[in-house]
Length: 103
Image 1 (cartoon, rainbow, N blue to C red):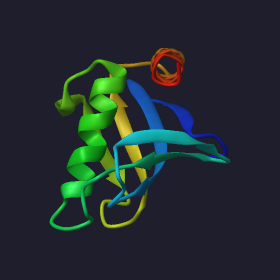
Image 2: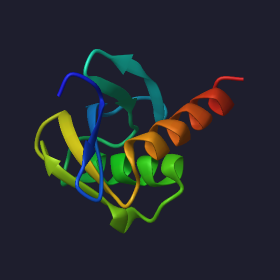
Image 3: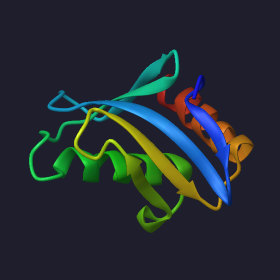
Image 4: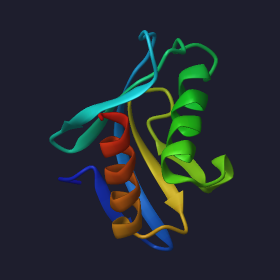
């Protein structure tokens, strides 16, 4: 994957590098082939993964059940599968969120 977003069957893949234990939860930009996401939760007992999924569900305005970590559950770099949204829909929602968050 050479971009953070990739079209997949019936959805989209998002590649994310999670930075746990930060002061606040925020999308801190894009770096090469992944988005950087700061989360407040520590990487203990799946808490950072839960916060990552909760964050993306909010940004994309979808239910948490529509997001699945398909690779990297025990790593900081993760691939998320977003059920039911095209790459274009995901990109538009991220763009909208990012513009509103940085006003």
